[in-house]
Image: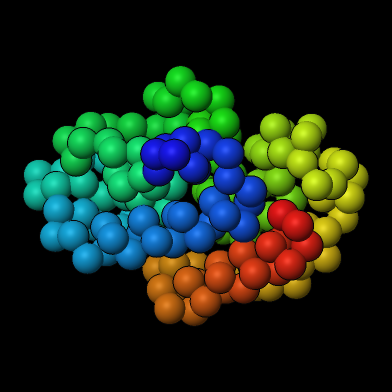
Length: 151
């Protein structure tokens, strides 16, 4: 399974882990800067990306010079997961769950149960710009909570 195929069928907890791994790769790459308010935006010196943009750059293989947003991807599951990651990076877990419609239809929980589980998550997600380490720690905690609950 390719990284793109793996991302397309990922559970929410898996999507978060994939994105954090991809973000670590772009943080270590001089061609990229991090701006959680830009999807995948070329600059004079390279490209700025958000959490979802890191997935675009790494797992989805987007060229550094391409301006991309989730709508540029034809696969609905990929598009939806990219949007979900934008919600997740800001701590909006209930909104993110709505973007996992394929899982909500066929996954381990019905929609109501998945929303209940998500709403019980009490992890505070700070702004990346304020404290990248605390932000990453919070997203790992969210992923752990979701995984422990089958999401």
